[in-house]
Amino acid sequence: MGTDVDTAELLAGRVAIVSGVGPGLGRSLALALARAGADVGLGARRAASLQRVATEVEDLGRRSCAVPTDVTDPAQCQRLVDTVAAELGRVDALVNNAFTEEDWREPFDGFDPDRWRAPMAVNCLGSLALTHAAVPHLRDAGGGSVVMITTLSVKNPIPLLAGYAASKRALTVAAQTLAKELGPDGIRVNCVAPGHIQGPVLDEYFRWGAEQRGVEPAAVEAEVVAQHALPKIATPDEIAGAVLFFASDLSRAVTGQTLNVNCGRTID
Image (tube, rainbow, N blue to C red; front, side, top):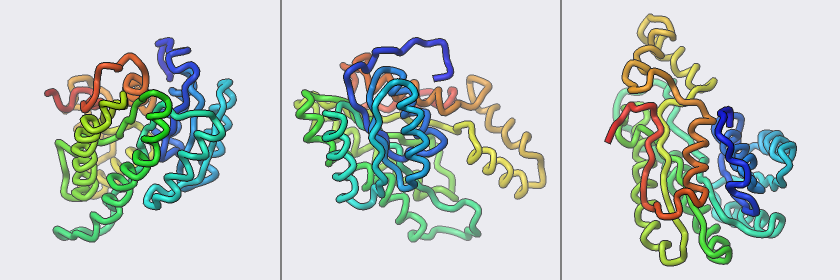
């Protein structure tokens, strides 16, 4: 996980599924779970990204099962979960990380509901479809954990990403409701809400913002960091640590909650 925290065996003998696996947060999530002892099922639209992460999981001595998946198709969600259960033997945790957002580089002159359709379909309904497919397997395992990756934008929405924020807010409320509905089965449902996350996408966003204002990207980044209690921007591995907490028995008495992982940008 890029830290000195020893998580080995925290998830020994368990199987976790991660959606939205790519080179950023999805990869960090998969590797954190594998380092903690879990075998990992991987879902994403891009097969090449899946295979690279699957190889890294196996290099850690864990089994992997990579299934190309578009979460907007319930049949593909069902195929992912059933394939993982068949090949790896069970399902103990699901991390809903697949997401999309509006293109903030496109011209924008006010409210446009069409910009909300893809975020709602992927971020909210796609995550719920994958959760629906996983619930019977979690019940068979005697309970387990579902983790929804939400966002700082739930509390701090910006006009260019209103559909993204709304979809994640809907997912948050759904997770709270699912926590009550699935609690009797021993299934916990929680959210991890990252703020800005270090990586190429954020770097591009800083460059774009700088171009709009005629300043340097470093100035935009400094403005963001200045709003944090911790003077930094979280890494994907640091976000993954919070997810690992919810996926493991360390949080066995926690459900229906959101853990904000944003370096103190928001303090409740």
